[in-house]
Length: 420
Ligand code: RNT
Ligand code: ZN
Image: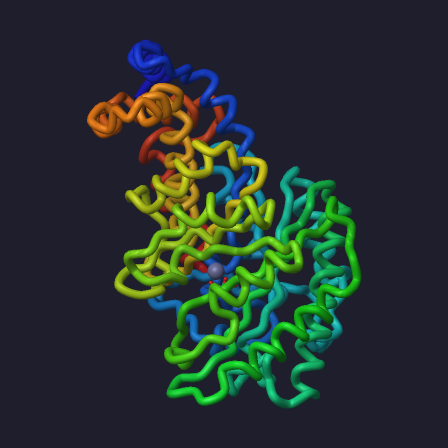
């Protein structure tokens, strides 16, 4: 579509929204301020560059064999840059500890240092983006039996505690270098496949291990700690040490960020409803926006009701300053750069949709007890010319409008990823 047509369509759309009392220019200005943390691990199926083994254990699984995945950090950075150029706005990178670069030197996870992430930091600075971080408690011989921080063996526990401590220091170094706090997330796979007798001792061990990891206070301007719960994993179907209640209690008691992953709850439960329940007690939270299909399958995020619900809760309650939005999925059955672009664009669209709600009017209807009006208005606004506002945003952000980004990914595939 020619640019002039995009502008004309936008101006007509702006009027339609104005009729509902919504200022589309203002919505776009607010949208531009929202940085979403794009997860590096979609780019190589959660493999990392420590060993050639890739993702092993941890109860998570990437399925698919799409060719051309990144095999080293330079390739991954190139793929990430390609994706960022197709996504409107300025976003962040979410890195896992297994993406360290040690120059071929074997360094185990309890010994990693900020220096091993210097190339990532320099790259992020060049792009003008912030970074977030994750300790990696899976794909490692010391995690092979499914336990890490809650392991009964004090030696193994110590190793993972030291990993956690090292990761917080890396997080702080990242945040300090980039001038924006790094959210360092902790997720462990610990749990049992089958009927469990002692559910308490592993939870006590986990609590104590976390206390040790978090003992040293770090500058909040550099590093923020988050803890992520889970319902079940492959191999931890019966019992997960770090359950929702465990981490909710831990986060509230210790003023940590709770990480809510959209795939980590019962299928009819949505994380949207949990924001207003948790934020009054934790202050801030981290989201792992994901899409489970029948189970915690980590499908690429799309613009569905769940996603819209999350964005609406963030915007309606003015939580933008308190919610760190990150994505978490890994689909190896489609082009990996496209998977990023689809998920990120969907998240941004959901936020735009929420910013374009006639919020005051809806709130008033509800306060007046006019529940008929509330439902009627919510249905009517679904067909407002949202696409015209979205296209105009992409145009002004200098990224492809509509499906034009797909051709760029196909080009990149022809020239780069298919040759790997
Ligand atoms: C696993 C958790 C965790 C991971 C990433 C790779 O179930 O969701 O966040 O997906 O750390
Ligand atoms: Zn997650």
